[in-house]
Every structure is written in C-alpha cells, then in structure tokens.
Image 1 (cartoon, one colour):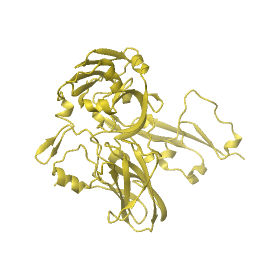
Image 2: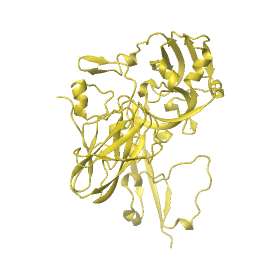
Image 3: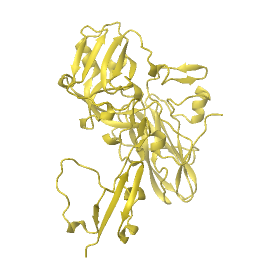
Image 4: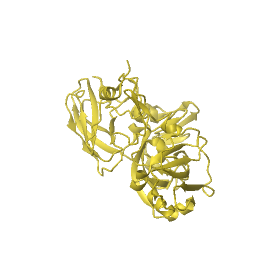
Length: 412
C-alpha cells in the first residue's frame, strides 16, 4: 500500500517557517533539519516512487527539493556556502556577491565599452562587437580582499571565508582588444570603470592586460548573472576581487595610477608604520570544509576535505594536521590543478574519538607557505586591518564528535 506524505512549507522574508508537517514516517527519515524544512511548497513524497509518474520535461531545471544551498546575505555582500559544494566550481547562483551601490539593470543591446586615453584609436565596443573576437575560456577564482572573519566558535566555512567563488569564465582577452585600439608605449596603467551607481573604479598595471586579463560575458556556460556584472565584467585572475570591475563601461590608459578611492582610502592596510597599497595578488590560503561547524563525526575513518588556492599561480601541496599543528601530512589534490584556481584536497583520517584540532595549510608554486595568524601579526603589527588576511584556520573536534571553529584574537 502506498504511503504518501505532503509537506506544505512556506518561505517567508527573514527566514523559513514550517506551516504544516504531516505523516509519522518523516520522524524516521534520515534528513538534516535544514534540508527538511527547506522543501518547496506542496512537495509530494512517496515511499515507492516507481508507482507514481513524475513531472515531465520543463523549460528550466531546478534543484531537488531536498537540496537547499543558499548564500548568506548582508547589506553589502552575500557569502558562498563553501561547506555545501562538492567540487571547485561554484554554481552561478551561489557565487558570492559584493557591490557598493546595488545591482544595475542594464540592457545589453544598449551597453557600450569605451577604450581611450593613451591609445592610437579610441573606440566604443558593444557586446556584439566583443563576441566577434576570438573567445577564451578559463577557470579561476575571484576573492574579496576582505575575505576573513573570526570571533566565535559557531562559524561555518561560509561565515569565515565565504567571499570567494570559482567559475568557468568565457570572454575575450584584454590584450586582444588593446591590440585592436593600439596602445601607446607610454601607457603603464589603465583605469577600469563600472556602470553601477557607485561608478566603481580601479587602476591596474598594464602588464596584467598583456598577461591574462579578460573581458568576460559568460559564466559556467551561460551569460554572467546581473550580480556578477552582466553584460560584461573585467576578470583579473588572482587579483583582489574589487579590481575585477563589474558592469564594465570604460577603460582609460595612462602613465600613472589614478589613485581612486578604492586604492587609497579603501583596500589598503597598515604594515608596521607604513601603509601597503596596490597589493594586487591574493595570497595562498586553504580551509577545511568537512568536517566543520555545525557537523558531527563518528569514531573511525573520516575523509577531511577542503579548498586551497593562490593568486600567484598553482597550488603545489596541501598539508593537513590532525593534532593541532604538531605534525603535518600531505593531502591528495584533485586534478586538474589549475593556476590561480581553487584546488580540492582530501585526506583520509582515522579518528580515535579523542578531542583534537584539525588544520590545513597550503604551499603555492612560488614557495609561499600559508602563515599562522601569529606570523601575520609579527609581520604587519597589531593593527593589521581586515584586508589580505589569510591565516591557517583550525576546527576543534570534541569527544562527542561535534565540530566547532577555533577563533583567534589578533589585537591586544
């Protein structure tokens, strides 16, 4: 005899509420509560799906009603749920957001990109014009320069480092466009400007344009999302996120940097008695995403998993410690290991049920080793600000298997 359960769950602003929950079978279902209460309205669940025809083809696919990964939004950003991802690619709708004046609504047919300044032929490019040039696809991460939070044990990877995401980006090399307009030999920098209400601007050394900078219009096989810069954005692999100007509308070539607000008043940080400016590359870092808060593990074999990356190139190795940093073991890296890209790592651990701490650290191809928070403070001083913070992070495993973040204080 068929048993059927009908859930009616309502998603309201400010949270998810359960309106009704019928059927005793659910009490025995092996489902995390967060997923159980996130089911869509009027979802029919049967103990024998072979007896009921399912819905047919649709115009747009969607996730299972049992899967509900979401970003964590604030007034100025939303964080990627790193702990819910199973590979290095971030689904486009889960890519972190950071913008300074909201998301502009831009008609792609009317949008234009002006390139001028120290060029031979100032030109305007439409989206259609850019798509006529030879295209390039590459996979790389984008990370906010302020991507680090600490302070309490009840923090997930999303809370700590959720301002980084990775996509497969498609567009045209900036060097191709620069060759089209002809760059004056005196040009050493270029200004990139966005079409948002903040008119976000940053200046970038021209060497980056000749290296790997891109103007991209597609993400993970589809047009980039509005919150990611639709219809076009600048992509600077490995450089801090704020420089990857979204809703790109203007590039101006010059001999000197423009010293914009975002590279003088903001996105700078103290180093002892000086101020560090133009710190472009994101330093190597890693984080264990499983096990992590609020998960619980059982005694026996546990596969420790996580992400590692570097803005200076490839990840060379990741080490994992299961004894609070006293000893380190080499983790396995998931191929392919790409330059300036998130790399998935795994380490099989036989937990004996004793409380401990687990940590990870990465070394990139330049030889840079991810530092501890103490080492960062020693190098920069107590007042180190919030930018380019990439310390080793630890998870505390209690005897009952529950996992908590280990916060560290770096100010006196």
